[in-house]
Image 1 (cartoon, rainbow, N blue to C red):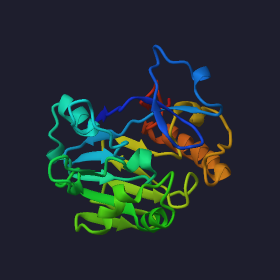
Image 2 (image 1 turned 120 degrees about the vertical axis):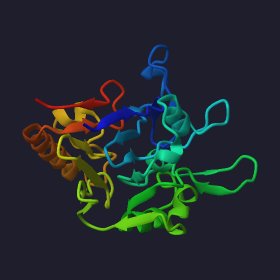
Image 3 (image 1 turned 90 degrees about the horizontal axis):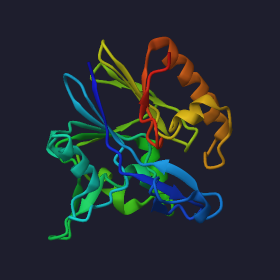
Image 4 (image 1 turned 90 degrees about the vertical axis):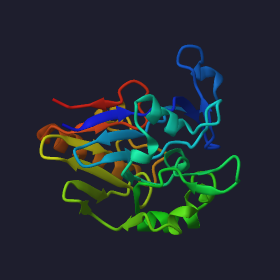
Length: 249
């Protein structure tokens, strides 16, 4: 059985400036946030199988008050040494998913990958697109190391890793977005990144303005929900403030 650990970095609002502002569900009000703000969780996931410690997306890259990277602290809080991570699967490279890919050492000032023992899996065209479109959504300084290290595998199209982790190029949210299905023979765990980011989006048919191709994303959500229902997938929702995981009956 695969073990699933949500690694929430908290709730945030994001508006047209693409700034992520912390949001306290107990105290803060959406009415006090800029018009059009979205409320999202930032929630990478760790999936532990017989063979791997797999991280799905890498969070914002923020450090806590002790100067420790939040994603590292979250792992440590669950008894996991960050050096144990064997694979980092990236759905896409928007900054709220890729900020934790690399970090600058506060002492030496040198930037390094935050999971040096892991193999990173990144769509090749997404990497090129991200570097060409660096700005509000893509932060080139966070991801440029991916092009310079040998523990990075650049995927294209659809394929399978080690016989049990399937990746599928979807587009939709951004042109080269990809999703993952872990099938270890017992469990099926699906990570849809920002094509399937929240439970409410799976249940409601709507076209999101912030998607590169909103119609495609809407169709994909319906398709994945149907496949998931038939095959008993466990869905992981990166941006859901209430429901990190669910299995549709």
